[in-house]
Amino acid sequence: METMRVLQVVTIMNRGGLETMLMNYYRQMDRSDIQFDFMVHREEKGHYDDEILRLGGKIYTMPQIRPGNYRLYFNRLDEFFAQHPEYQVVHSHNNENSSFVLRAAKQAGVPCRIAHSHLSDLGIDLKLPFRIYARYAMKDNPNRYFACSKHAGQWLFGKKAAASKDITVLNNAVHVDSFKYDPDVREQVREELQAGNKLVLGHVGRFNKQKNHHFLIDVFQAVHEKCPESMLVLVGEGYLQEAIKKKVDKLGLTPHVRFLGVREDIPNLLQGMDLFLFPSLFEGLPVVLIEAQAAGLKCVVSDTITTETDVTGRIQFINLNESPDNWAHQILSSSYEHVDTSQLLRNKGYDTRSMTKWLTDYYRGHGMHSRRA
Image (cartoon, rainbow, N blue to C red; front, side):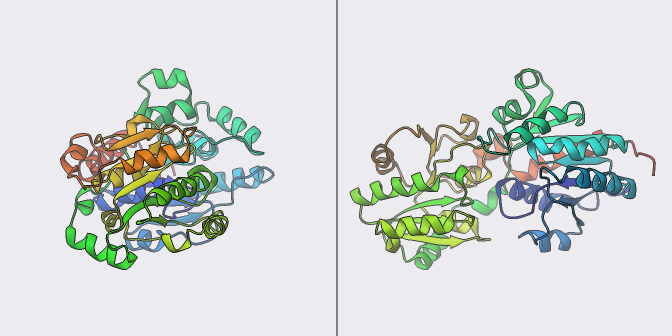
């Protein structure tokens, strides 16, 4: 059988949630059957680009999607699909901006056009009118609708679509075995962190407004006042990182907070933690919370995150209106042991080994008809 090439449309293949989810599936694919290629919208190199090329994928760079740039972008999309008649499946992960690439794909006769929602909100900013326009333009450009959760599907596609059976929830699956608890790995990580017997709280996420790092630091300050033998580990990078470092320094917490940057060894780092913190303002269904649960960690998260995230019973939801002191009390009242959750995750469809077969069959079943060259 001829290899089917599926075009995955993203912003940039950095180590974010949806990108990690894509790579989790991509690594498990039989690439003689299904091969992923990527359309990206940034000139700079992504963290996963080298691995994509090693796995046989192609990377196509497009202009950024922004107001004032639409005409150039639309023309480039039309040119792309005219030059690449091989794609029978286009799977777009750009939330409301998926409408544009899927419009071009539809005009080019691509039989399977998937819009995939990964968020439940975007907040209010100067781009809001353009986001509303993009969502309105979605219409029937996609003919398949995916979401990381029911809530994320309702946010992008509307309540009517969410109430029907038209939206497929594709689980943000992980390679469960790679997160299995190993006391030797835990000891190595804690030695690297110079953690000793301290209570290690962890967070993995981009330093942006959505992840709510300022509140996270307030919570840790409250924890540290009550439990001086505690430390916070922050993994990720982003435009707010320097501001957060300054806040940590101002509060006198610098010796107790580790900024680790972007890391490739997330499964190992999670083993060295005692509890996972995630007070985001909004999310779809964060891959990192599935990873934290796969590592057996108790997670304390904001109640803005869908309860669909709680796959293992290891998540505690707290309202963001609660004070940092109240958050600290809940954190210090938690259990810190790592629990084996692997079978629970497999049973609920969060292991890439089983879900990759489902996705392969889906692509094959819905992208069967080649379009004309």
